[in-house]
Image (cartoon, rainbow, N blue to C red; front, side, top):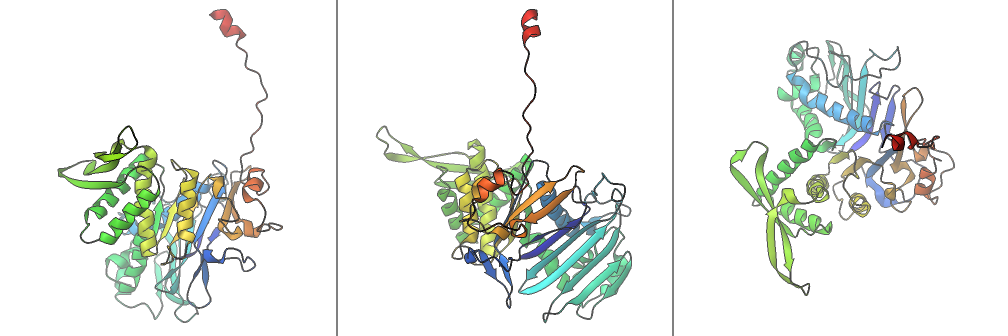
Length: 419
C-alpha cells in the first residue's frame, strides 16, 4: 500500500511535491474510506487529482511511472546510457541540469519502507532504502554516487553486487536480479503491486487487452478471476453478456488472441431468441476500454495493489467512473487494501458523498510554468458539507483554466467578395 510519493525537479515540478495517502487527522468524514494498517496507521483508499489542461496532472502520473521504470529497467542499462526518466524543469537556470529526485513510502507485508533515488542525465547520484522493523527507522542500504553503505539487516553478497552496479544502474535493481532476497520483494512491489497505467497511447490499450486476454484464457487455473471479470463487465451495462477467447495459431504479430463478444439476439417483441458472437475489436471504444479497466481493477482488488491511472474518464460514462471509485471505497469489496489513484477532469466525482477532503488533490501551474500540488485538506475554511464540484468549477480551489472571452469579431466580408 502506498503511504506517500514525492517528486522534485521533474518536468513541471520544480520544487519537491508530495502526494500523501495518509488521512488528515482533523478530518472524520467517510471513515469507510480508510484502510487499517499495522498499529494505529490508517491509509486512504483513493486519491483523485484535478487540474487544468497542462497543469501537471500527467506529469505527476509520469513521475510515478518513471520511478517504476527506473527500478524495473535500470539493471539493463549499458555503460554510459542516459536515463529516459531524466526530464528536469527546463525553465529555470538553477534546475535545467540539476538532479531529478523521487521518493516513496509504502507498506509491504505490514512493514513500512522508504525508498529514495536521485539521478542526473546518466548517473545515480544517491539512492537509499530504509524500513521500520520495530517502529524505528533502520537502514538497509544507502549510496552516494559509487560509495555504498549497508545496514546490518541487509544480508547476502551486497558488497559484490555493489561492485557490479554501474553508475547508471540502481542498486535495488541490480540486487534483485542477483538474488538478494530482501530486495527481490521490494522489486516485486514495483513490478506487481505498484501499477501505473498512462492510457495516453492506443498501443497501451492493445498491450493490456492482450495481457488480460492471456490471463482469462487460463480459466482452469483462475476460475474466480474469470467469473468475477464477467460479473464486473456485465455490471457496466455494455450489452456484452459473455466472451470467448481464442489463441491464434500461429500467433499474429499484433493479435495473439482473438476475443469474441457475446450478445443477445431479440425478436420484434423484444424477446431474447438467442445469442450472437462477433469480434470484440468491433465493440465501441468505451466497451474496449472497460474490458481493459475491468481486468486491471479486478486484479488490483483481488491482490491489494496500488493502481494509478491517468486520463481516467476517457471514453467512460460518469456513472461508471463513480461506480469504479465506489468499489475501492467499499470495505466489503475492497477487502485487501487496494488503492486507486487517478488524474481526471470528471467533476462528477467531486461530491462530499463520494470523497473526503484529503482525497481530493489539485495541481496548479503558475506563470513561470511551475506546478504545485495540494489537497483540499490543506485549504482553510473548506467544510465537508460544501458543494465540492460547484466550488471547484467556480475557481475557488484553483486548478481550473483561466478562459478569457475572445475579444474579436469574425469578418467574412472579404471572403464573400472573392466568391
